[in-house]
Length: 162
Image 1: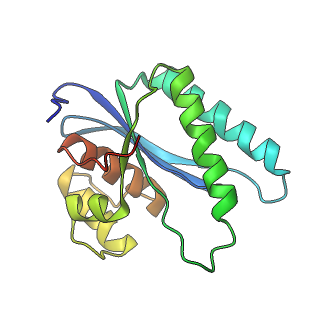
Image 2: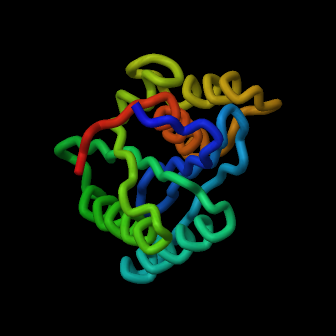
């Protein structure tokens, strides 16, 4: 198992419209938030913005490792192609910033790390608030997901996806 003691971990919840992120070191939250793109922008501009914002985030916070949640899609999901393109752009940006081997996690691993399998968004928010002794719920819920992803990586979760 990898030892992330003292390491800055960037957790990212990939999407096309709202990308959640959380940055932790040990049991301390350094930053969390979201990257938003407008549905009115052409897809290539949204992808460029995601790339640039991830690079800016990495330059500002200097993470040692990145963890990404693998998107889960149902058969009816019409956004799957866009989200997978965003995931590729995020991985490209991380690689350009020296984080070329991110840890990939399944949604079930992230939820199990902070709460329980099948936990809803509000349960994840409350669990993250308690784990990191935050004074309020991390909002929006996508940002809480980013923190949960970073925490899951910190405690040794990994999906072994190459």
